[in-house]
Image 1: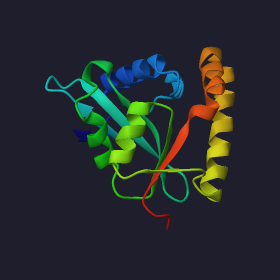
Image 2: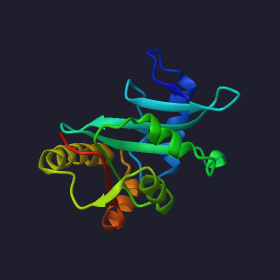
Image 3: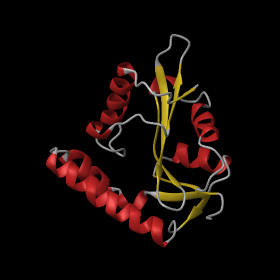
Length: 161
């Protein structure tokens, strides 16, 4: 398991973009980033197999993407990523039943909104992401996310400060 350590490996970015391309619930591949808030797990051959990123949302952090390579699912990698996210106030939206189960086992609880400031920050960021998806012609992704918008559930862990 590796936290971001400064230099970005190109194979990790390529892998992450491919994972985003396959998962329409995630942000567009063109927005795949690896930075100081990234957590990456590599296999024994030093290939990336799991990734999570925390995004600062003023009061706490959103786990804005968590992805595990399909060939490595069911091995507890999501649990490891969540452990590495720390004990700060965290929240995540997902409609994936497997991830919902992992979040609950990691101490997250269902909630309705992440608080006023976080909701405002999310609204601004989602408008920006939606605009980017229109600009980059990600119509399939937009339609998918709009179709399932009511299926996304919020999970929260920790206390707001």
